[in-house]
Length: 90
Image 1 (cartoon, rainbow, N blue to C red):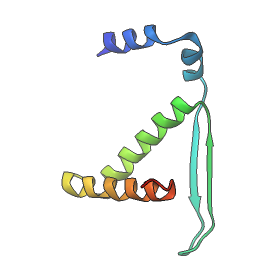
Image 2 (image 1 turned 60 degrees about the horizontal axis):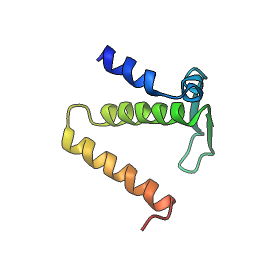
Image 3 (image 1 turned 120 degrees about the vertical axis):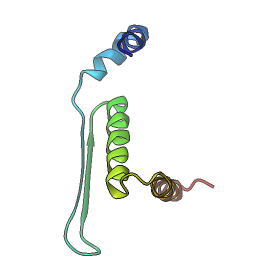
Image 4 (image 1 turned 45 degrees about the horizontal axis):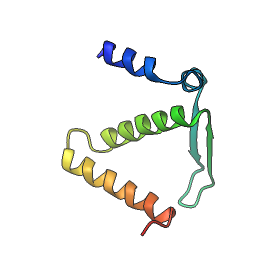
């Protein structure tokens, strides 16, 4: 696995390698109540943000329904459909 990672990193352009060194911050907060104010913040290179979002999504789904792959699949499908709707995908 280490050799695979090294090979992937070696194949990347220097600009991408440099962006991978930059910090990433992803934040979500909601005030109390059903309609509490929502504040989000995303900062950093796109590749790092995508990696962070994938990591957060995995952890949230795993914590929501630990050990139940079918329910995890349904949670992911629900999230996907919500994002798809917001992006107005048909």
